[in-house]
Length: 215
Ligand code: B12
Image (cartoon, rainbow, N blue to C red):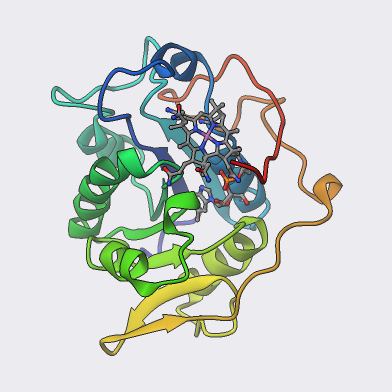
């Protein structure tokens, strides 16, 4: 992370679906709630700006790549991200997520990821993610974790006391203590009542608040 940079940028990315499906249209005019919750919390961290790029919802002006999703080369030139957070809510998007993870990791950007795909008691899913460009996995709900993680990454501090993380250290998988789910929803209001957090690529027009634990 560049210490000279006055404000750091945390870019959250919702990877594009692998193919057209019955949710393609609705995803084109909405977004997933998880990254919005994480971005809302991250935005409270002093010195950090947040943007969310939803590759299913680039709208008219979002920079597009010729192959699929957003043009991340352009985004990194236009507004270089210091930390990139990848939304792994759906297993079908994981190949794209890994592609993005490797793209950013190769450019020296710290890559983190979270979402339901990674929530697994056995280590295979976690180890696979950490072998595919992701440096830190956030396991479980991330509002509190992200507020501790971003300053720790900036300072280069030890992460062992931050709950809800998985990462590789000296070739060994480290899983920190589990993070308890959020209880106080009023503590974490959504910020999309204003436009400030979203970059040109993420225009969100419809928005519904819900938090489910079923499925
Ligand atoms: C609401 C919901 C829907 C809605 C809206 C989905 C959307 N895109 O927002 C609708 C009805 C459209 C839907 C449809 C489907 N869904 Co659905 N859905 C859910 C549900 C019930 C809640 C999701 C939610 O909003 N949670 C609230 C948010 C705040 O929580 P969250 O996303 O987990 O985010 C938190 C953490 O994961 C973490 N986090 C999230 N992202 C990130 C990113 C970073 C960088 C970090 C650090 C942390 C982080 O922090 C967040 C805040 O605490 C979940 C079940 C569940 N318990 O989560 C299933 C779930 C996500 N759905 C699932 C599935 C399978 C589907 C469908 C494929 C079903 C189908 N066969 O059609 C479709 C696919 C839709 C699509 N293409 O997007 C599965 C996904 C499983 C998987 N591994 O792929 C789930 C997990 C249910 C299950 N247990 O099977 N779904």
